[in-house]
Image 1 (cartoon, rainbow, N blue to C red):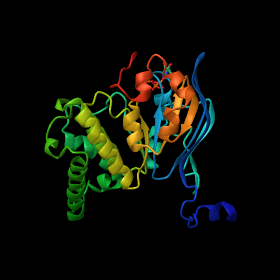
Image 2: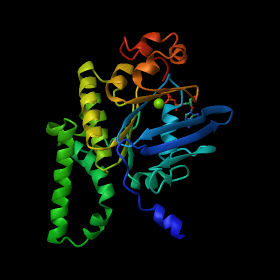
Image 3: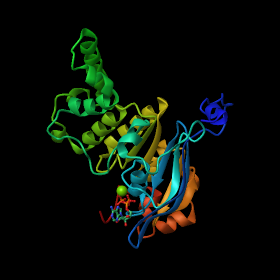
Image 4: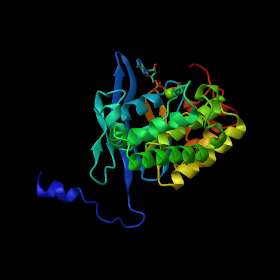
Amino acid sequence: MSALSGAELIPGPRPPGADDPILDVREVTLRFGGLTSLDAVSLRQERGSVLAVIGPNGAGKTSLFNCLTGAYRPQRGSARFRPGDTGVELVGRSPHRVARLGIARTFQNIRLFPDMSALENVQVGVEMRARAGALRGLVPTRAVRREEREVVDRCHHLLDFVGLRERAGWPAGSLPYGEQRRLEIARALGTRPSLLLLDEPAAGATAAERRDLVALIRAIAAQGVSVLLIEHDIRLVAAVARSIVVLNFGRVIATGPPDQVRSDPAVIEAYLGDTDDARGDTEDERSGS
Ligand SMILES: Nc1ncnc2c1ncn2[C@@H]1O[C@H](COP(=O)(O)OP(=O)(O)OP(=O)(O)O)[C@@H](O)[C@H]1O
Ligand SMILES: [Mg+2]
């Protein structure tokens, strides 16, 4: 390692208001045969911010998450995590290695262990981080038992944080849909992420659950976690996101603060036939998948 690259490992103090990204995605292109799912997608997210990704069905939103988390490998482009510090390239990393960097996600199609309790589902996330502790658990010393108690306490705290305190012992699969989505968020938070990717956390939620979700996302961001949020409900997005990226047919067609994006002619055009959704006048009137 050269002296220069060593020096780069120690980030200097940043003046207030300085550009401090957590994520820098450049020209990511993903193809499936003849279909271009992402076409030179670029975006930048400020550390500690909520950035929303919106767009019609099939626009490439989930594909983008999959490229960032190692599930898909794009043919072109880069995605640098914490580019201002040491900077780590996400493209080409396995999902496991991405998770260990401090990036967690939830899935559009819920992926909980339905027969395990809500508490045990969160424990999976927490213990992923405490793997060394699990190995030491082969010799159950007092310290190890204390560590186990701390894990359980933390899981209860996370359930409380997402509003599921009373559900700890319930099988995850028996919870109402909206609560399962919140449980996924608790599990993702268990890994202590600095970047949290939420894929349509409000899908299927009631109006009251949407309000709770807005409060929850704000609370997560208030703890310094950067949130990248895929969501169709533009009102929800406008309530939590500083900035919005709009995808359509795999391309970024607009980027900016909610008010600016909402009145952007290209965005209104992309939602034509579904213009109510773009204005946020209706509940999730979505066709397709
Ligand atoms: N594994 C795959 N194999 C083939 N095509 C895929 C695959 N994953 C995504 N695609 C295609 O890429 C395009 C973008 O899909 P993606 O799921 O990213 O859209 P989306 O914006 O998340 O849509 P939705 O709002 O419906 O969730 C679609 O045409 C989809 O069929
Ligand atoms: Mg999707």
